[in-house]
Amino acid sequence: MTTTRLSALDAAFLAVETPTAHMHVGWAAVYDPPADGPRPGFEKLRDHIASRLPRAPRYRQLLRPVPLGINAPVWVDDEGFDVSRHIVRAGSERLDEIVANCMSNPLPRDRPLWQMVLAPELEDGRIGLVGKAHHCMVDGIAAVELTSLLLDPEPEPPPPEDDEWTPQPAPGAVGLLADGLVDAARGALRTATLPGRMARSPRRVIDLATRGARAARALAGSSRPARPTRALNRPNSSLRRLGLLSRPVDDLRRVKDEFGTKLNDVILAASAGAVRRFLQGRGETPIALKTMVPVNVRDPGDAAGLGNRISFMFVDLPCEEPDPERRLRRIHAETSERKRAGEPEGADDVVKSIAWMPTPLQAAVSRFVSSPRVFNLAVSNIPRPRERLYMRGCELREAYPVVPLADGHALSIGVTNVGDRLCFGMYADRASLPDTDTVARDMEESIDELVALSEERRRAGGADRIAFAHGPRDRVRASGTGA
Image (cartoon, rainbow, N blue to C red; front, top):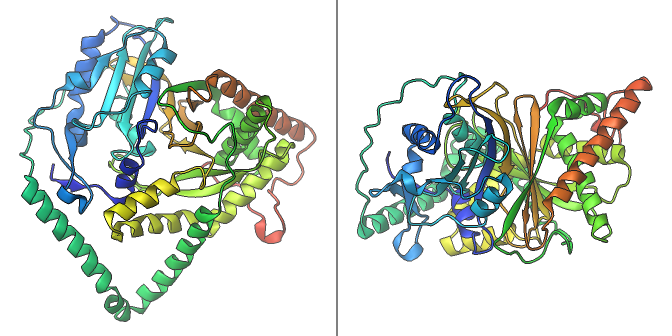
């Protein structure tokens, strides 16, 4: 694999990492042992995962910084790669303890930025796998797809692939410095020649004007200040916990269909209700919370590509609203309007423009954007294929996402689907929010509330299943289940 430089967004996730804000994405997965055949032990599971590394070459590369910090770091082959440093045996049979121990420690920078912790037998008899990879290496979509690389649609895995990997020598300091200067000069040249390219192409001028308007809207949304809360926005510790909740996806689909929204709107409404309950339980008056919602901007067919291909939009979760139907309608109206205005695409252009800034300024901007002055919490829905999947004959039953916490954030919410169930991961700073099980119960009660509301509406005959906001221009019919 050739040397690859971090993109501006990848480098941003590296820049915002601190001793109390570990920028790894991750997952906690549970598998049933084979119904027919012996249970694989740690060594067999480790060797199975290791045999799949040819499918993801980045997992055998590490970051090499550029001298003087004149450009972003580059990925180079790890000439001393040892899989036993990355796939390790769990020190507990309890999934919550394995997650806490794994996620409370940063990934060492002197090796490829990933780790998997295997528990061949949990206390309930199932098999546990907790994994993490640095956010500069993968986004949530890519992390899900990479876990799928370890899995097969049939219990019997195919024969191992040939692995002829030989690490390529890393460039020396002089080469890194020269390449960094050349790449920086190319970027400056592209910027300097932009007016001439525009003059030769009127279509380019129109496209640039459209993209500029979208970027301006995205900037306006991101620069709107958040109002930090005592419970959710406080100094972090390095300790982490993950609250778990699994629900049938059809529960939330019925709500979506009844009210004519998107599935992601229902997830956001459930999150608003859960956080409202959590704040009330802490004796804090619920307020609207500015929420960062990642949006996938990968090209079709590029889901397995590494690096970050996500953008963002900022949505106000109406936690102060006591009525669950009004919460759902307000969220649907806002997400629909922001997507119609092209804010995710505009935010993507804004992030790309950061690449033209000097490296120290890029880092400063990244730290500001990740602060609680910009948003209160993150809620991320990470869709995945619905078919049954197996790891060396062991069927995947649950997979709970880990969405990283930047400094000043005590809670994030990640959601993904496994088969016909949605798995919610409530990731929290253990010092400021020790009882993640309470947040999981709050989420379950919030979903129950929405399901009961949709059932009541269905029994009453429905009426118009179009989501109304403020007027005719805001009417949006339900179409599909995407974000």
